[in-house]
Amino acid sequence: MTQSAPPDRAAFLDAPDAEIAAIAPPTAVYALGGTRRRAAMEGIPLDETYIDHSRPQMVDNIAIFFRHGIRHLIVPCLGPRQLAEVAPYGERIIDWSIRALAGPEMLEDYRRLGWRARMIVTSPIPALHAAAERLRQEPGDPRFPTIWYYFVADDTDPWAELFAAVQRTGARTYAEALRAVYGEEVPPATLFVGFGKPVTGTTLVPPLLCAPNMQCYWMQRAGLRLTDRMLREILYDYAYTRQTWRADRRFRYEQSAEQQTVWETTQILGVGSSKNGFWYPEPFGGSQE
View 1 (spheres, rainbow, N blue to C red):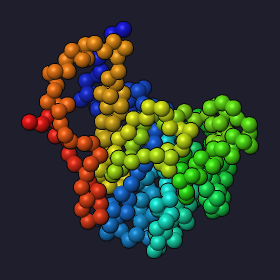
View 2 (cartoon, rainbow, N blue to C red):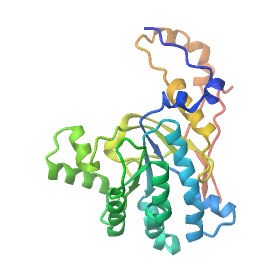
View 3 (cartoon, rainbow, N blue to C red):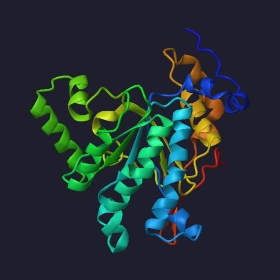
């Protein structure tokens, strides 16, 4: 079977939202990061002011995903490293997260925008479980775009939650396990958009919601500064540029010699450098002499 040529990239980047939505995956992960870095650059105090300043920006970023066709957006919020921090951030981050994600202003935004919000809380943190219940009580249709906020206090908690749910319900299939843990059958995420270091795992993606072939991208722009064009660049690559598999691969290898200089590179994607306590990726230069 002959595969059709991908659309012109420039035309795709300027296409109506509905055209982009047609190729978007149903579920994506948005592992945002660098929010404190951004606040510091803008002179915002790293206290409640920073949380209140960031919340509307988070709403705007989430809206970009939903506007481009994603129906379920997994947003990892707190992991073991954040919860292990000291000083005001470590002491207040749970309260701040609840204020940002389940406070009156955010509840009003969910209603205004027609979104559902759910919390996946894998750890025994009563305040987060109470907030999760508050969100479940909000009116919302399963057909609405849904945000799944994800919280993990210990690396093993996602597995403990999964095993407990299976034991409690007697789930025997993948679909039954999804319903046991999340209350519904959420499609697994095939797209991961992160920030900074190329890292993922079960503290960022719930075990049942990681697709077997999840495509990953890591932005290097600190904070909640995703743009429509950035997501469209990602979606074009996701839907077209990375689709290199063919059932008949003979022609592919007949051309390998023409690209020998590219494949002789010694560069490694994921190797970076450290400056002032932050990691930066090394650029990939393509072919090497």
